[in-house]
Image 1 (cartoon, rainbow, N blue to C red):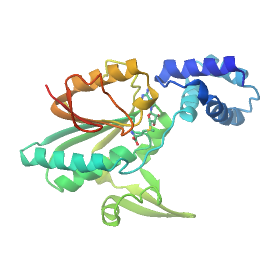
Image 2: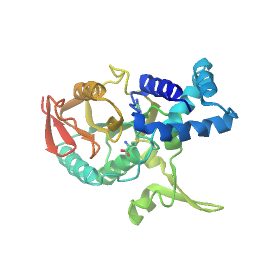
Image 3: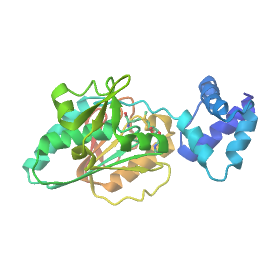
Image 4: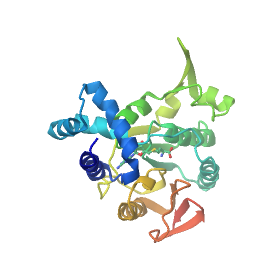
Length: 268
Ligand SMILES: C[S@@+](CC[C@H](N)C(=O)[O-])C[C@H]1O[C@@H](n2cnc3c(N)ncnc32)[C@H](O)[C@@H]1O
């Protein structure tokens, strides 16, 4: 791939998703774009780029985004966040909270929002409570997978056996087993495509908790600052923002107080 084509692809990705790909991502972009080129039987990167741009349906652009973006995630990733969430939810419900709104922004294949749903269900049991967990991502492919809610055995390993048995149905397949999330979890969840680069967000607050983890790391400072402002607008006072362990919103966290590294509370 010529450097000029690489730069055009980088710019395209940045304009669409806010993902900043540095010079040293050349090999990665080259390899991931080649995946799409094989599918389409296009031999040259320049021709592929022209194909993406000329596709008015936007479908190939979506495929390009799907191969470029990193969707790595897992159940109970950064587990201390869920310990903290558990204690916050316990406090809120004990003081009479009956309506809960949580947003998992950049939810990838669903492990994060399903983990949140498990924690909520474990806490409230069968007590009536108005719970909505919104899970969004820019990629249609990961949203589709999340809606399906089926995970291979190794994926559900971080969920304890007892909890797994409560909330997942095991389905035998020819090469092992799949774990399918039960309606009890799915009822609380809704999944949507959503691009974090477009503000103001078309969402109504107030939200109790926002998870925006392991995506801001790909964004530049300006976009991160804009996101944090929007999260602040949408959260209720004393609502929580969780960011990834490797992410920091230092210097842009006006109106938030750090309660633990990577966990913020809206002050006012
Ligand atoms: C590494 S995953 C993080 C998943 C989960 N939050 C976690 O921490 O395990 C990053 C996700 O961000 C999504 N993403 C990238 N750019 C985005 C954007 N502009 N708007 C929304 N989602 C985006 C990707 O599609 C990907 O699924």
